[in-house]
Picture (tube, rainbow, N blue to C red):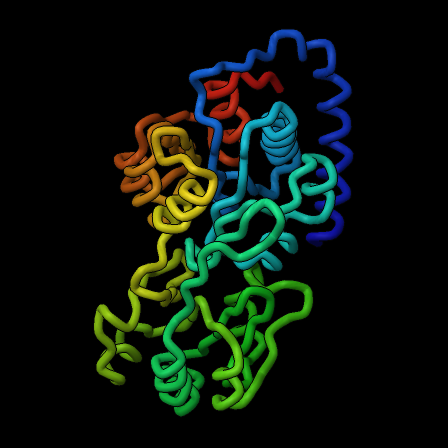
Length: 303
């Protein structure tokens, strides 16, 4: 299904590029516009509605080709981002995936794909959490996310694996013994009944912070990992700050970044907290080209 969508999307991108070619003369570069712009994937850039996705991607590519540093800032790992967006996204935009802010700011890369921020969960915490959840797999159904692999310490049932279907990459979820996790940097944990698990191991704010997802899952990250911290590290690496940065998002994990960035936008389908945090809002949703609309307002990009 995803592969078929990627082919349809690529066709629509080519069609929009061809149809819009005469309009390029109306695009304008604004010297006052932010040179950096962070774009969330799920609920913002990505949609399974082909025309809306194509408009978002064409606008992203146009902004990138004009020299603006448009980049991904997502809760996904680099590999998961490539899986959901498809290789045609990167081919058509010219953006390699770097620089990028991944795993909600826990992992940040420069333009050459070198890590400039690395903020995994503490190994001792991961081990305690894994041991507990492995004792009651049906209650917790945990997965452990690295930069490119997804592990579980439980034999997941089909319906449990489906919880992670949109996140898991093409290699699937690998079942391993608890003790194997210590050999990897674990940046994010997903599970059911996360509050119960954290209480059972007496976790504190120094061990992690957590958030809920729309699927009823709990996300667990390093206490210092969030998109704002990740983007701040990226901007600092390039010698600039939030005054020179914009962002587009829709969810609770975008709120801190929206508060920090001077040019923050919420798409029309954004959660109320995200809309309140954003400096600006558009009525266009991810399905109707919300990112394209935002990049038009910020950079004058015409799609």
